[in-house]
Image (tube, rainbow, N blue to C red):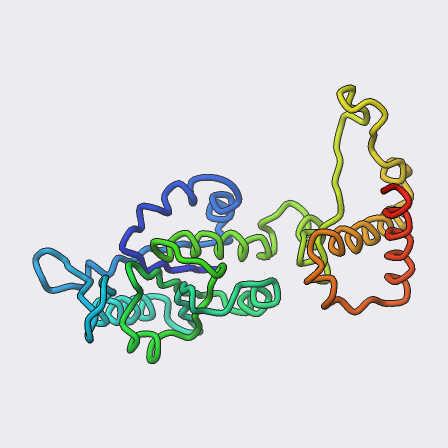
Length: 252
């Protein structure tokens, strides 16, 4: 995947691309990231890209011309099948369903706004989609862009060491939260008798898979009832969930 980022502050991304799976993806040549600064497309000496809003009111927005020129230049570089996304609190919220659709594109432009936003004419004529990471305001689109990139690359084949690691993530797993995970040592002295569930040490992969599904159903029900209400349970899932619920109330 090739992602081009249009931002007034491309330096903000330096640390992100230096570590973790983003860095590994770049080294494996599974991901390419390019940066473009709208200031480079201005004619004025001070490279000013913002201006006051017509009609009055506080704050400034990014001007249309530098952004349009940036988008044209990036599209010329990336060529065909490019999706232009504007990170905005007014956009639709990012979820796993959206991520799966976005993976159909191998070339993406992320436009990071600043201040009170950007000229509406850019949105109406040059942006394919507006997306948001939540109902709150940030100083700019750089942090949301970093989050979107991190979510996306986890689903690019070859990025994670195993496919199952990705498929068992929360939300990716049929809209459910992930099941609990444990690792060595088996016994933590600080917790006394509380131990790793024996089923996970049994070697019975069919039973382990059922246990994990049961836990995912129960944990989603407890922690994210809004998600659980949307889930249409199969007969098998109903049985597993009822077992979880009975055990939960029994131990309360």
